[in-house]
Length: 431
Image (cartoon, rainbow, N blue to C red; front, top):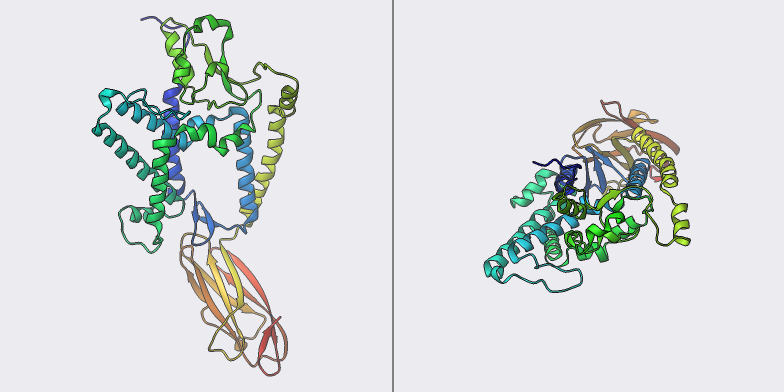
């Protein structure tokens, strides 16, 4: 067996592995509690913690760090996310594979709107039925994934098996049906048309490309070996010529063209003419384009992003330090049985997803001048408990500052101050 003088890269297998892992990760992130959204509480859930939008520094820190990382990723690797991770591309590639397998290699959902050419031997009702059922099954499976970002895994399982669950919205099955329909239409009719012409996210990625960004390099010195060969163009499912890539094009850095060229030339014991390359590419047009790219070079961008990322990290660290597992609030209570407005509602909210114990106390008034309906509170998981603080009608005339204190056995404590004004007749008003 002849030993090749080079080691051809196999991007196809690596990319399929990354795509499979990305789909698994998209499910595991919310299912394991790493991140999801709690619509009932109107909060984000991170590692079992409720993060409210009022937790500004945590939210801002995470977003700054994420955006800094994305800007550097897109500046260095371009649209590699589209080719290796994007769910839209994963589904579109799978749909192309199933269509070719059941209807023939020329049965392509073309980017220019040309009707697919079905192979006569495969143009049977059974093949069409199998294709439609496979599309429907995958649409149904992927339609469940968004639910993990709004419900715990056990609630999603109740939805799948049609088991009653008080956390499920009554209209959820209709919402799920809309998800399934959208995905089905996408993989049956749209596919990579969306990637190439309609994806706003991809246009946003293009804004971060430079002459140094990862790109496909064509070995022009061996152009003679490429005459009358169109294999790399045929392998490109985005329908571009990989030999003529530019800074701003539709290439998604998937590496399929490189694999195709390597396979073709491996028979001669030679590497292909295409490869991935970092660094400056040769410009056909200089002047204004060169000046623009020099002004936003990768080195300059990396320096700026380092400073911004450090700011985001400091925000995030401060947010972690100041994050409170419980929240205390008090406000006037509308109690119909009360003749005078002497009642306050005390509310304690648990931001953790396990029960908590809280003890309430009142400072600033004699015990005979107030009554709390309950002082030892058991807060349910991610729940809230309200109690009534009733002030005595015998309070002397004047302003009475009082402090509501809440403590938990884990060391958390918080205070809430109230300024209560008592009139001579025993009625009261809040100042």
